[in-house]
Length: 184
Image (cartoon, rainbow, N blue to C red):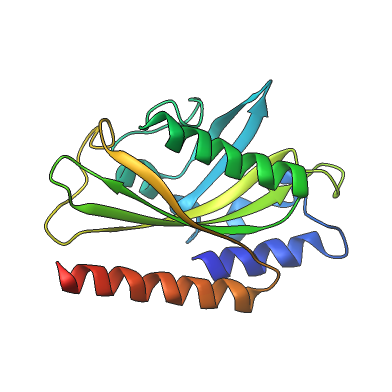
């Protein structure tokens, strides 16, 4: 999913630093839609403008319209998430991030995100488009509001400059998830 989105984003941006939101045509990427999220900035807060159905299911709720970090703990994790979005907005660079949540059972929910800037002028980010892929520990499944009370943390952040970067980072994350689940 991440590599497919990166290639689509890259084709849409052309010679610009980034495509505009109006360049993204949902009918052209139907397989990605359930995994997509759009973030915009309101004052000093970042808001979930759109959350795909698979992402909402994995989160245990639809976060559309809510502020980023409003439903996670500890506060340092919410601040770290906001910092990642700020980095995409301020640099206009694509990021691949990984993170994890530990639920009440201490089982790990691993996530990877490919965060891509969108800008109406093609130069300055005014939105972030990203895919979110999740891997749950085999012993658990997501339920309604499971995220409430789960402790989250950011694990890795990497700038990406090509589809090959995204593919390599995605493979490494998948291997790490498999190894973690095998060890459990």
